[in-house]
Length: 339
Image (cartoon, rainbow, N blue to C red; front, side, top):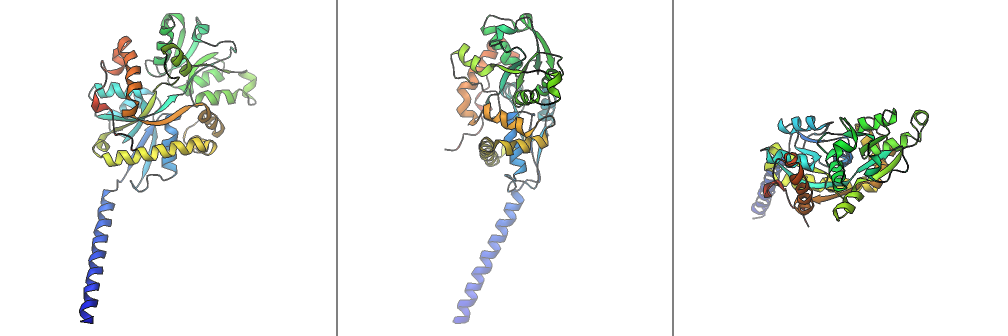
């Protein structure tokens, strides 16, 4: 009897071990061989970089990569070629791609305010003060050009007639024009704003590039002119490709993104060191400065929908092609933020 009892217990232990082994094999099989995150050299990508460097998704995939896209054309090629799984992008670009039949969903909005006019004119306080002047403008017909045009029109100005817009490929390119004194004014997105301001306080750049000033806060202008909160749903994370079929993966990545964004806000200089290692032309200190002034918070796309639809509505009434000719339907808005 004692032998029978021991044998029974041994059998149960063997069965449990077998089950545990099978469960482990299932979990291993569920792991992805590779997960690709992508974003621009801008504030929306900071948390993505921390997610990769901190190993936040090591339980999800054998390798996690971060790929930088530098202009809207690179972004569209990346999305259309399914070369990433989760991509940080301007919200209007996500809407445009979705309405043109691209299989994606917007999961969150995390960038609510990173646009500033930067100028050598310390007395310029609103867009009308730049009438007739040359302004370096990144991303023709995309953010921030869209926001500039909307706010100018709201004040009775015409962006194309009343200003001399010099279009460049990215905010970092506009920053370099300021540094070399090829322009005196630019519309920049953080962290390019903070980098430009830091550069003017350094030697020897200060000799060729005298003081720059953080001029018009485009978010404050948005709130003032449209009678809303001083924030704009500018960019967020979209899911594309095979990852669209995995709601659990999307929830896991969004939870990690929210946690990494919180970490970056609480550890600005350490976050800046991570970002500067990945993005040329940025310093840890400038990234830390940008975190302090940027409106960064994770809001699930379904919760941000009212603000998104107001923003998209402004585009629809003026330049409908920028969002694909209509407001995105329910399928555009991704998973709901867990309580």
